[in-house]
Length: 208
Ligand code: GAR
Image (cartoon, rainbow, N blue to C red; front, side, top):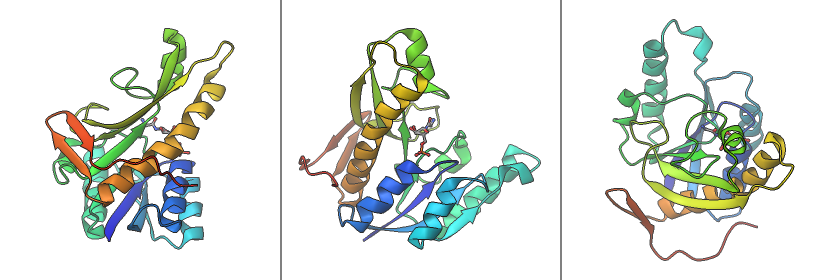
């Protein structure tokens, strides 16, 4: 059984989707920790309700990004996780951390990468005027939202959409795509050749 750890900065609805998928037996893994840079994150409450250990590395208590990341790295190493999932982790993970866990960190992004990387992806999509957006699950490399893509799903941008309505439509798909990608990882069904990622034996089963 794989050990997964989740990094989240806020609401944690994607984290909850993982907790539920593990609970339903859809993902064969143990969640060994929730790590948050924000002591106010609702994800912390979700972890405690699910009996998942919480590790707070409060960004505001460090005088530099280097110090913060050194502390974060220590926590991540102590978890001995096979996979780290960035589920609404709203900071850029430094190269020093990414290099420690090659191919073992994945991120969820609320747009169809490589479009609209970085913050406020849904707002960027609306302002650009695209007719389709979506979500992307990808491996984390040293760039910003640039790693190899594991899963993408699109959603329409509808007339009259605002950031909230589009974000909500994308979020529903995030809650399906993230467990699917994590399940494939935990079942050793992901193959990576350069930027090309395939999932072996993909089926249509998804958590209820
Ligand atoms: C999600 O929409 C996720 O894709 C996004 O933050 C939200 C977190 O929601 N992540 C990013 O924008 C990363 N750059 P959640 O806390 O309810 O899972």
